[in-house]
Image (cartoon, rainbow, N blue to C red; front, side, top):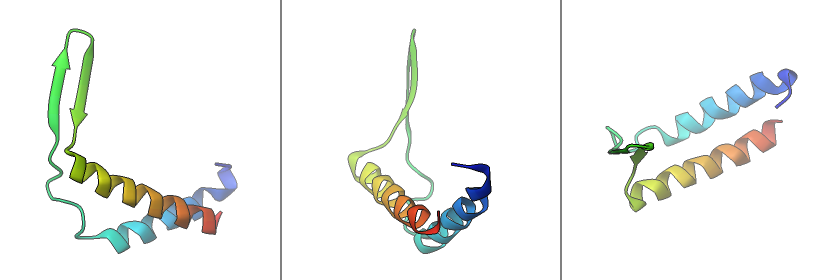
Amino acid sequence: CADSKVDALCEALQAVVGQWRGRFPSPLPLEFYSSSNFIGLFVEEKVAEVIKSFAADFATEAASKA
């Protein structure tokens, strides 16, 4: 995003975080995986859906403020 829109983007993120407070599992359950050529953190499908919904809400809010 353009530098001039960073403040609006931060406001959008703060607004969505406020709306979502208490809806994320705490702590976020992450499963660590490593091999010789990969390191990753994975979440269960249910948690992934929550994260996707949060991202969609943030995208909507960011688009409305940008």
